[in-house]
Structures are given as C-alpha cells and as structure tokens.
Image 1: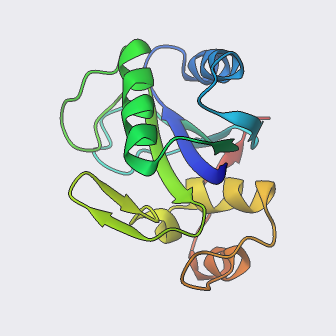
Image 2 (image 1 turned 120 degrees about the horizontal axis):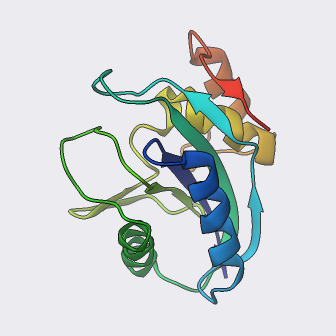
Length: 159
C-alpha cells in the first residue's frame, strides 16, 4: 500500500456538498483505504476570475493502485460527479489532483508527481500541513518551509 495525497476542489453547483458526497463515495470503494480529509477551505479561483470561489481540501489515503491507475480512477470520479473539461483553470464540478504518491517522483506525459503547482498553492499547502504537519516532499523540503514561502493566505476555513 502506498500513501497518497489528493487535492479536492469544486466551484460549480453546491461545492461543499459535492466534496462531502465524494468523501462518502470513497468510503465505499476499494481503491482507497485509511482515508482522512483536511478541513474545507474557500479560495479565490487561480485562473479566470469570472467564476465562483472554490471549496478545497486535501485527503490522504493508502492505495494499491499504481500512479496511472490512480489517475484514471480519479478522472473517472470527476466524470461521475459531472465534470466537463473546458477552459484551463475554468469552473468545474469536481477537480482531483494527485499531489504526492509515496516518495515517488514521476515525469510522465499524463502525470507529474509531485504535482507541479503544489508548493505555490496555499489551498494545497495549508490543508496538507493540517493533515501532516511534519510532511517532507520527495525533494526534502518540509511542509513548514512551503508555508513560510507563500506570501499570502487568502483561504477561509469553512470547517
């Protein structure tokens, strides 16, 4: 079993309810085990600003799936929850990103691990730190050092 971290985000429909439904759904699937989720946070969109705020969280779990099989599973869930792929960084019903997959570093045409934007996104770094305050990335950086490097934290903790 490999320990993974997955970013959750949504900003269409009822995003808080979508993330709660996703977590309920994941509890019933064999693909992920030992699931824990951070608090939910509200954040401004990263891309175009003509869209609603996001609700974000990070979950940690263990899995027997390989990295690409996990990616396929997560993309299936996005589709199941109504995601339609449109413009880059556009609004979406559900967005799931693999942040970390054990200590693996992967540069594949379909998947980069660690997630390339992990260190710059407060809506990822702060929930990660909430789950694992002593977490170290595969390159040796600590989650604490990432928090210090982010200039502003525009997150609002929902619960």
